[in-house]
Length: 282
Length: 266
Image (tube, rainbow over all chains, first blue to last red; front, side, top):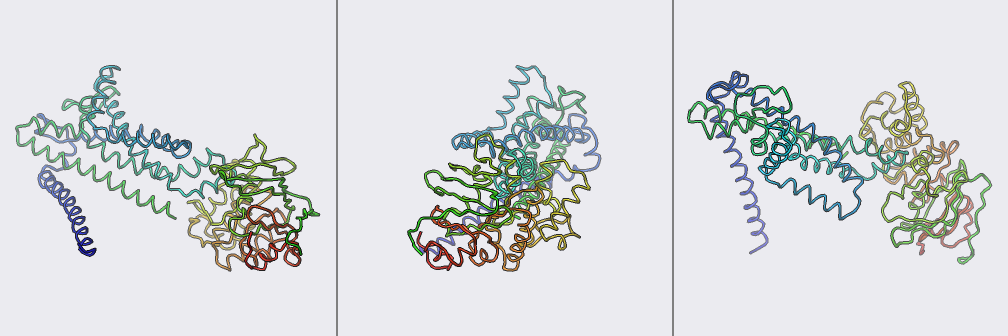
């Protein structure tokens, strides 16, 4: 096979792969939009669900999901910054560096249902917290942690050494270099990672269904140890249990809103990453 | 001139700001600097010249101990500043670096404003009121001959300046910390001839207040700027003396060849 033919074949295969991925994504979006957009209305977004989801809207599900993921972000951010700073600035041993990378990637690869089971055993069974939205936020924070740590670490690592040296040459000690040079740029990376982590976390069902959510009868939680209703578990319940076509229509509508939130977080994350790259490449 | 003549130790008349005694430096197993004995005169410009790999940058970077942060670096001997050995264990390295400022080869401005860059070092070292900040910014930009060019855009991003202006901003930032000595590691290497001349003029004006040590690959630049000259080759100090003497009457054949820009085999 000539070199030219091999090049063309490779181009064909890689273009085909891109087209296939795009087509699947577009198909998914189209189906959800086609079926879900009819359910969408101000009252659907702003009222509580009734009759086991067949009537009313998804207001408290949106609120519950946002409450959990935003709390998860608040828990995750300081932990991720600390871990990334330690990995970037203080962990100099090559073996430990490698081990930490394996652990972080390993944590990222754990199936989400395992997090749910872990939360159920540790918090609900052993610590007796009961079904709690805050426990759900903690579990989601742990799930988001690797994404945020890696994004922050990569942001800090991409800062040219000359910035650190210039700061040290001005008489800044190690901690001042960390806070004055690394954190401002690393923070932008952390925010990017956080938004991408949020995009993943808000759509997760398995980690929260055992420990944090209830299907109905819940509005705004008044304590840390109360459950919430959330979009993914609401969709799951509607799709599995509802025989009423109106409930199914609402499931499509809720899916459309969920996809919209995921897309919003993802696009904001990608925009912030592009903006951050521009800053670090100056 | 004798190629094998023993090196006379240069005894400068002016007071020494820094003295290096039997200084050796290694990176892992590589012996980079060997038994260096040097005195840098106060309020003079000393230029370190020599071929690539002769140890000039290692030497200058040892004076503010910035090499300490590089892996596998090791050194022995003494570097005396105000009659104290700065290499002694327990010395506050961060404090030393406020006394010995450094300007690097490539201008490195922080991703903040022009004024923010001038204040970058000093604001980490002491609390400053708003009027104090304004005074520091103005004084040091004037000292770095940059004030006239940037006084109306102090809040602009520092990265919007030209490379030559950025290098002068780095000098202003270094001056703001109030060092006694300033180290310049090939400060004009990445600049055009006009910007290079501006930095040279700046160094000449700064020597009234500061002791300056600078590394240069440019022999003509060394001739224009340096009061004293130290020629290094393969980690050894080959010759050290006043610039005038080394250019007109070097005692070592290697020095003559290098300063005449001939091939010099170390």
